[in-house]
Length: 216
Length: 374
Image (cartoon, rainbow over all chains, first blue to last red; front, side):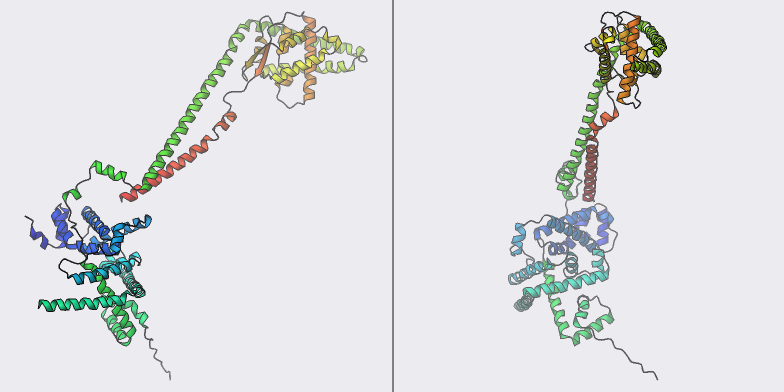
């Protein structure tokens, strides 16, 4: 029977136990942060299959490099490993550009399932459309700006944490996030997606409100 | 009274505030910055619109937060097990093409370099038998030289006798020269110069020990003797000429440079060889001396000296039967460095080029491997 007391330990204690060879302690950390890491990888790679591979590689690399963890923010350290893995993958893609069938399917939105099972079908469809548009726009950003925006908006890291993950200063992070968002806004405006996004948001709010009313 | 004018900073345009928009939305501004930004936000509807659009994008991006993977990323024992040698071999086999290409280039270059070096070594091994063969040829002369050793002293003595005869004849002819000056002025000139010069040069050559005979020089001597035989007074009574002429079809002996002294060359004549033949085989000053000398001087001196020698031998001894003639011919040394240099001229640059290619490929391979490992 699995030891549930481990789940209540904080990150540093789990890391210490994992350094002692306890794989279960490390798996608690994996469960705790895998969705964040996956969100970053998905935003950077725009493919769920590639993102999953990158997350798995990042977890294995993190386990092997646990001795080099010096404390602090474990999630930022894990996201840094995952970000490096994604950058390697993007460099590899640039060297050998291929048309992945999975990527083509995901661009059409068939393989995109970002919501939990509890989400409503209408809301899931709207979110899927929003995610498809945003991922296409994110791909137009420079890598540093894209990473900074994803770390700020998807992973909800502070500027200092983002600076730690990206090995840069807070001022640079601020600049990258601001430029990234401005560029993203420009892209969505040119494509007419911003007004549609506004409509989608309004529709989504209406759906949520109606659902709450039905529940009540 | 000085009037102080208060300069107020002009209000920033909305685009200027836009730099702080993201920080405002992320709550990363200080209290002062936030209050100033909010006051600017109240004044500028354009800035408000931009802020709302960025907030919309931010909320849309939060959709990605809801994304969940289709599988769990928990690690298992198999994921963290130490890699087996088979797996390491498989990974090595799946190394990038650049590393494999660099390794292949390094291996090919080293193999080519080894092949060239081995070929060079084999090539020099082929040269060794040639040198041994030359040495054997040169040593094959040794028995004949050894056989002729007892004769050497006899012929040296005969040579001295001939030289003294030259001198005596020269003195007698000089005495007669006053009487016969009107009859043969050209012959007197040669008789005045040749004996002393020939004797001195012969002695000098014996001391120097150089016997570098050349086939061309031998031919020139023979031609000179034949020229002298054209004179009717000497041609009929010149047995040495017959011997030298017969020498043309005789056997040859090849000597290495510096192997034989003049005395040895004299001694190398067959036991039955006459002194005339031995004298013919002596190196002439012009053929032995490498000093610059014009062809005319050389031929004139040679003619005079040989004419004297022939006349002396004619008077001293009767003509003998034809001995086995000996000709000395110079051959090239097998290991002359200037001859070996052109053969290696294409190998050394090739070896250097292969060495450079191998070193470069190995360096690339090492760098790529280290980068991949790290």
